[in-house]
Image (tube, rainbow, N blue to C red; front, side):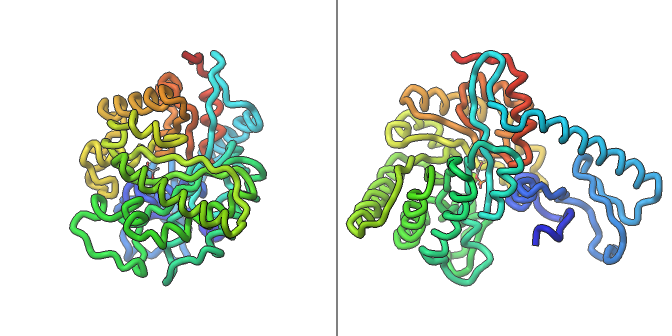
Length: 373
Ligand code: PEP
Ligand code: MG
């Protein structure tokens, strides 16, 4: 129950694990990889969690309470000033426009999208609808979840990512074999290709929801052109079957995530197959640098600013635009204000970030001098 959680502190995890990402989406202050002692008496005690400095205080003294209140006041004040950017267009002083979308995990996050003033949803991590349950969701259950999102967004676009189960997101009822290297194993689109009936149920729900408002779909963990062709074939067969049944559907853009180095390197060929690219920098960093994003002891080695990553990001944008398709970034790096100018300069058309980051990012965009090439 999100409304009952003010903050959380864990011993495990890393800043790029999904726990941390979901906390950012919901605007819940959280600390991961701490030394907190589970024997500490915290029940019934006052605790302050400082997400800015990564510190927590159990039974803080008066001086700490005062300092933390001041800090919170400053943060609230900053947030109030950002309100000036609500409803404004995201355009640089040089006239370059960029779409600022939000990442969500569940239909209930739509409230954060509206509160954060995002222009749409650039990544709905649909696998969260499959987690924390004992059996596959039915087509109707999925449809109802997507319907809530589409209706809640009131005309704004939602990009639904097909389920990215596997790696750190496991559901027992999928009965996947235990793997030595789950991050390199059966995950994302690989599962959908191997389990066409699971894919079909999800796609039918997505296509049904597309009759209610603007919907795009994108496929995770693509590495090869044949995978995209295969998935497109599967999608066409599903649409044909639905059309025969007389089920209403809207126009749906089909895109892919670029989150493997292979996909970035063959992006010229991939661009000919799809309507858009969205770069998943979390996995692209992990796979390019061979650094496990989940492993807290590798935080120093997990370097999303690595020149290899930036070269791939530039290449992807160039190849997208050569083919006349749009490209965005939906990994955590998209919301990194120190990278905004670089991404604008590369020509990225969309940045999809935690809903709580949108106004801050819009301010950064509006203050930038970058102009269209
Ligand atoms: C990514 O890999 O950057 C991404 C957006 O997907 P996820 O974090 O869910 O793997
Ligand atoms: Mg990913």
